[in-house]
Image (cartoon, rainbow, N blue to C red; front, side):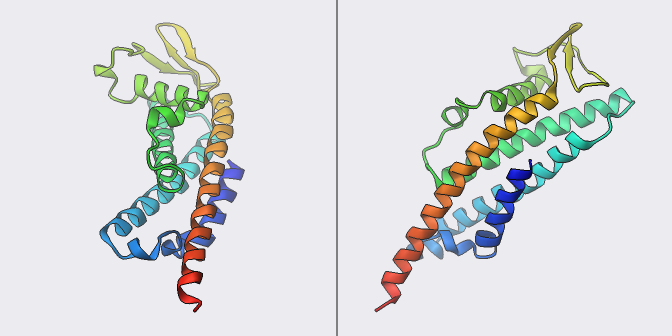
Length: 194
């Protein structure tokens, strides 16, 4: 997730310290402007924290205790969902306000797989018709096993694929931010230059 960290640093150096940079003057100090600043702040902070959590998961030693493995895998799966929701929020803010969750993730296979895994194992699985049944987490490779069959092998490999998809999504957001900041800057220059 090194490239994602560089994206976050670049964004934080530019926008996070000056959250009004992406708001047009006509809405900067309105209720709508406040909502956009809060959405940006919440999504950005969630993206930073979940990136740290996922990095820690990749680097960590596998717990010997099966209960600890459950907590770890459920926690990291929840971090993926929070991260995905944060990226979706930033995409809505900077790229396309009509972005829907299903349309946004339709091109992202690993993204969808990790979210589905979370939903079928840790995300209220008792009410889910697609429940995996009894689930165990392998001590050796973070595979998820259900009814004696490995249903999600090699989660770390999926994270690598997911990271590529996440990078694609954040690059779209970075482009959207650049366009938005340039538009706002141009509007301000024309307004105050004469």
